[in-house]
Amino acid sequence: MTRPTTPLLDQLSGPEALRDMEAGTLRRLADELRAEVISAVSETGGHLGSSLGVVELTLAIHAVFNTPVDKLVFDVGHQCYPHKVLTGRRDRIRSLRQKDGLSGFTKRAESAYDPFGAAHSSTSISAALGFTVARDMGKPTGDAIAVIGDGAISAGMAYEAMNNAGAEGRRLFVILNDNEMSIAPPVGAMSAYLSSQYPSNPLHRMKSLAEGMESALPGPMREGARRARELVTGQGGQSGALFEALGFDYLGPIDGHDMGQLLTVLRSARARATGPVLIHCCTVKGKGYAPAEKAADCGHGVSKFDPDTGVQAKSSGGPPAYTKVFGSALTEAAARDPDVVAVTAAMPSGTGVNIMAERFPGRVFDVGIAEQHAVTFCAAMAAEGLKPFAAIYSTFLQRAYDQVVHDVALQGLPVRFAIDRAGLVGADGATHAGAFDVGYLSTLPGFTVMAAADEAELVHMVETARQHEAGPIAFRYPRGAGTGVALPETPQALEIGRGRVISEGSDVAFLSFGAHLAEVQAAAALLAEEGISATVADARFAKPLDMALVGQLARHHGALLTVEQGAEGGFGARVLQGLAASGALDRGLAVRNLHLPDRFIDQASPAEMYADAGLTARDIAAAALSALGRDANVVPLRA
Image (cartoon, rainbow, N blue to C red; front, side, top):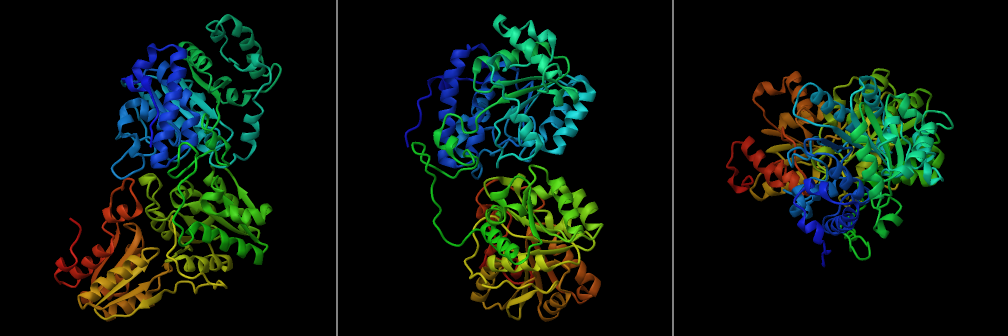
C-alpha cells in the first residue's frame, strides 16, 4: 500500500515547532496530517470520521497553547488520532487498537500530552476544571482546554461541570466541536439549539462576549464581532445566551476548518480571557475524505479499508452477531406485544435497536448520551405498564448505577436491561470492557441477572425478560459473532433461577455462566483425552442462583469450577456464598473460581485478551487438574 507523501510532517519535531509556523504552512500540514490519519486507519480500523473532523482544530490548539504544560483534554477521545501523530507517536500510529500498540483513546500512560484518559463521554469539562484549580493552587500546570463534541455536551455531567466552572469563574477554555453528528444523529433540544447558531451573514461568524477581545481582532472583523456580541447578550438574538447564563464567555460559531480564523480566535481568547470561555467551533465529521463524509455515520467506526476507494474489508461471514440476534428477537417480541418499547443512549445500531426502529419507529427512543436519564425514563414507563428494554453497553450502564439502584431496584420496577458488550471487547480495550455488571447488579435486592451462553439462549432470554413482571431483570451477552447454533423458531421463557446440564461426567464439574460455555466444553474435551470425566453445566442465572443444581454438582464431583467472563466478586463469588451457606464446603469440596484477573487488560483481539486473563480452554483444564490434585503438565498453563 502506497503511503502519502508528507514532507512537512516528516520534519516536524513536536508541537512546539507549530508555534513558529504561518497559517499557510499549517494549512499544508493539515492536508498531510489528514492523509496520514487516513492511511494509518486504513490499516488498523478505528474512529476515522471524528479524527478527520478535528485535524485543523488540533493543529491550531497545539500551535497556540503551550502543551503539555497547558492541558489539552479530549472528550471521549476517539478524535485524538491527529493529536497522537503530532505528539511523538507517529512511529506507532499503525499500531492503533492492536495488542501492545497505541490505545484508540487518550491514555495518561502513553504520553505527557495525554493529561487525562478518556473513552467515556462528557468528562472533559470536569477534568479541565480540576486542572485549573490545581494551577490556581500553585501546581506546575498551565491553562486547561477541553474539546467536547455536540453529542457529548448533551449529557448531564457536562452541564454539572459547566455550572460549577461558571460559578468558580476561573480561567479555562471549552471548545465545543459541533459537527452535528455524534455516533448517531444527535437528538433533543441541544442539537436543535446548536443548529440554530449557523448564521448566513459572514460577519456573524464570530461572536465575542468579552468586549476587550474585539480590540485584539483585525480591523475588518471588529464590527462583525461587535454585532455578534449583541446577539449573544440578547440584544437582537439568543445565540450563545445559554452558555453565558452558565457563566461562560461565548465565542463563535467559528469555522473549524479555517486555519486563519481558528488561530485568530484561539490567540485572542488566550490573550484576553480571565474566566471560563466557550468557543463554538463548527466542523465536518470525516472532513477531507469523501467516503467518510458521504457515509451515514461519517465513518465513525471503520474496519480496515482501501484508502483509495473507502471500501471496508468485509467480514468472512459466519454466524450473526449477538447484537443483531438481540435486535431481531426484540423486534419480534414487539410485534407480539404492543407494550414493548426500547430505549438506547445514542447507540441505536451499536445495540441493535435500530432493527426495531425500522419497523416500530414510535416505540424506540434514543435519548442521546444520557444513560442516567435513560434508566429513570424506563423506570417511569415500567411503572405505567409498558415493558421497556434499556439496551445499553455494560461499560456505559456503569454511568447510571444510582438510577438502577434508586429508581429501578428500590421501587421494584420491571425494567429490562439488555446488556451488550459483556466481557472483554477487543480493540476498544479496558475502557469498554464489560467486566463488572454481574457484580454491581447481583447485589441489588429483587434483581434477576441472566447471561446468554449462545445466541439461541439470547433469544429465549429476550422472551423471558418480556414476560417478567416481578421486578428488574437483566441479561448480558458479548460483542461479536455467535457460536453458530440454530436459532429457535419460537422463543420460550426460561424458568427463573433454573440452570441446565449440558453434559454429564463424574470427576469434575464445570458451572459456566454466560458466553464462555464453548471454551468450557473445549476444556472438558481436553480432560477427556486424559481420561478425566467432566460435567458441564450452564447456570443461566447468577441471581437467583440455581442452588439445587449447585448442590448436585457439589455432591457428586471431587471438584467444582465456576467460569465467567467477568470480574472477581461476580458469579463465582455468589456460588461460593451459596455453597458456604448450605454447608457444602464443610466436607472439603475443592472449588475454583475462574474469572477476569484483578487488573485492567489492554486492547488486543478478544482471544488474546482472554488468553491474557488465563481463561483459555487449556487454562481451564489445567485449573481443573490442579483442583483434583493431578499433574497439570498434560495441559500446561501458558508460559
